[in-house]
Image (cartoon, rainbow, N blue to C red):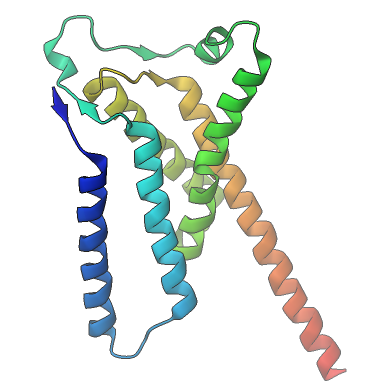
Length: 185
């Protein structure tokens, strides 16, 4: 079993990120957009946070080598309804937590990458990002369990984030049009 120190890993990733963003800034020669740079760095912190929340306690092993060790819950809502029998609040928090975990993905991705500003693309990105996490948990972590419930709620969260992004973006452009119309009148 391999145990990783998350602080060391995240410090190294952060140093590499700072080096990369610094080189990118130097190569763009004055095309620095402050607000966009803040959003890009927040997205990086978000990705680090998601990996921490979904991979903690960072024990990795080759589950392929163990017979019967691989388990993936493919029954939608079974794990949710049986994980805390009688405790509806825990079940709701579990669902809400998975939705909130991927809500920023549905906001950051269309803001940073214009070519994916379509609900189907965001749903696919949310689904495959969640699937990557669930398969990593299933095949490489002995302490975590991959579930279809997480796939469903994470994808729903990404879609809800995109809907929120679209509503704010639409309202922003309508307000600009309204202000221009009133200024010219």
